[in-house]
Image 1 (cartoon, rainbow, N blue to C red):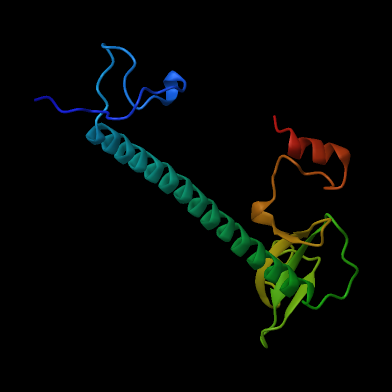
Image 2: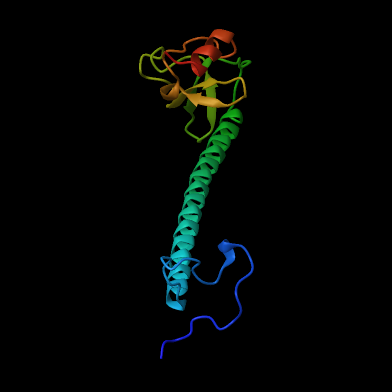
Length: 162
């Protein structure tokens, strides 16, 4: 004797919510089929969730690296502002840092080359003072933009290279 698949009355709702096929050509939907569909959905949702969380974790790592770099730059800038200076520093100018024998730092307008390669104290680098009071090592200064960083032309060149 054949199994009875549905023992209730006829379904009276829309075809989309029918618990059984509405045509003789429709495939039979068994409990195993429903379980497989649920399993596939679980796998897909798990993979999607995992990939989204991985993306967020990567973004967090990237932001942590950026924050670390910002904090390191801020510490360097604070330390450089505390170096001895006997003149008024101006935005956009390059200054040269030297270290005395006792470890203290001081600013000079005289470059290493102007000392003939033999400064009175150890050379610690050359920096340009930015409009935000940050210090940029001369090695990192963009050679193309050799203008006052506050001029419109310098800003446009920085924003629209080429």
